Each structure stands twice: as structure tokens, then as C-alpha cells.
Length: 109
Image (cartoon, rainbow, N blue to C red; front, side, top):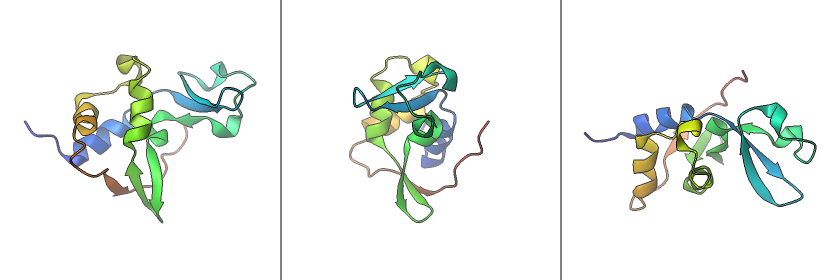
């Protein structure tokens, strides 16, 4: 069975958890509720993982960032983040460019 770019984008939209940037350590951290970040992570830097993996490209176009997906994979909590096979295939296919798609941010909640 081949994996399509549509399936990869759908898998990215199914990611769970939140990413925030810790200014003191200079690292991104992943948590599963916004309340668990603490005072060292600004509320404005907390992003749902399904939005974190998309990088602005040109106007409404966004790239599905392999670099940002790699940050999530390095957490070794694939089941909790809901990282599925289409995303793993995307990460293995360095011979193909990053996916570019027209996107709008998902509504909060």
C-alpha cells in the first residue's frame, strides 16, 4: 500500500500534545496539557503539536517540517503523540521535498 501526501497531512493533523519553547534552556518541550508547562514557558509559545509541525512558507502555503517532526520523534513517545505510519514514511523519504499545502490554523479546543 502506498502512502499519499493527503494521508501524511491527515496524520499530521491527528498529532496530540502541546509544544512550548523554554527560553531558559533554549529547547522545545512537549507536554500533554497547557497547564503542565510552568512559569518558564510563555503562554504565547505553547502550540498544539498538529500546528507546530507546519512552518509558514508563502502566504497561506505551509511546509510540513521534517525538522519539527524530528523533534517530536526524538521524544520517543510516539503513541502518546499519535505519530502514525504515514509520518514515519514521510520522515524516511528524504529524496522527496517537504510537503507544501494551503492551510489555515485549526481552531483552538
